[in-house]
Image 1: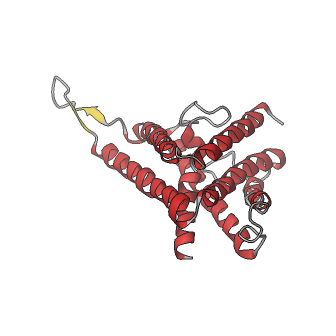
Image 2: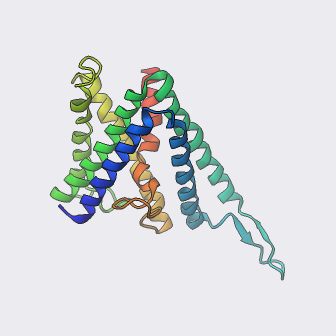
Image 3: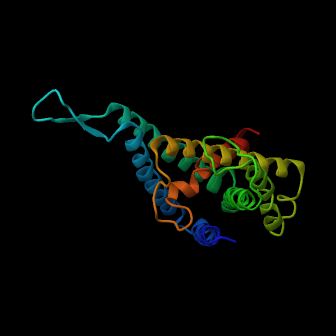
Length: 231
């Protein structure tokens, strides 16, 4: 096991422990808000690399007065809307209304295991590359993500044998959440590749920035909410 993988697993375990504590306390709203704040800050850094900073100098004038970068402003508002309203709203709905703290933790656990499975199996087996968007991702890693995403059922089965049984519906739910998580990961990887950056930040050992760690989660949680709400 490489040192990077060890750091990744340790960081994931610590984050999962913090999530469990926050998830079952009155600090859930505070925790989600802090996460959203960091995500938006890191996303703004990606946008500044892609379309330039929010303020740019107007070279038609000698004094070079600054003007708003409308493209940056639009994309930043769009990103904030998605993360705050779509992701944040879905998190609160699953946590407090549609599901429960246990259901929210189950969804996040699927994402965690999917990420670790993809990283571990991809590193161990290697093989054919999955896509040019992210050269480090392999077909074997994607399969590992799908397989590991089912593991939370083993843990939550002890909590509620009826709700978290190994039924076709539950297994399919895990696989779909893993798919959404992987697609979200690829989307953020594509943006980082276009922006020519490796990590969105450096606050999480083995992961980089917070957005590097939750890139799949911010897409998987709203998708899970849609499944709960309409299917």
